[in-house]
Image (cartoon, rainbow, N blue to C red):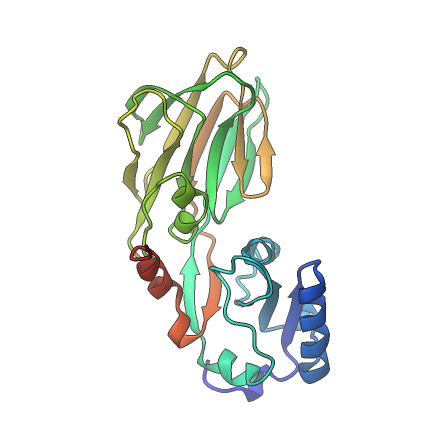
Length: 260
């Protein structure tokens, strides 16, 4: 972005359903107006990381840049909230391009349920019974049986979310890697997951699905009682997030690894 003038009247604001975000929206609308999404060149999202994901899902197919300002609790994907200087911040913002994961979840004999995930695709046990899952990577069996609470594949941007909570590795943007991380693995007990090439296809076969039912979740899309789930990066879809130069996502991903 080379200047602030082209953005005048072309910023759309969206806000989370909280008092803090609503107050921020009112102040920003009074200062800058609020363009319709169809007319906007940039979307400014006011909330936390959940709103950023929701907004990016709304922008799928359009690749409209989204600049987040933190009015929530976590805000790892958000910039600091400030009322003043927004046009200058947007003009100087640095872009981070992301590709979501494409999930195909098979239930029974019907067609697969397909969804995109910006954070991760996770498989989770539905009952007290541990899940039993076979894992294939690019058609080759890598684990014949993982007994666990679940397992997930994450994008680099999502590696600091559920993946990190499950003790998976943090992946810098541009590394072209996808973390594959078990959730409370029972056997093999020492397996801590794997780093896969971004172009890899991961297939999860659910073993004993009647006795040990499993749900698959791609961000907001949940599919219960799956028997097979296929996951791969969808490079045909690009998502763009904007960050202040001193608050870039790559820098935060690196810094997070040194947090004690």
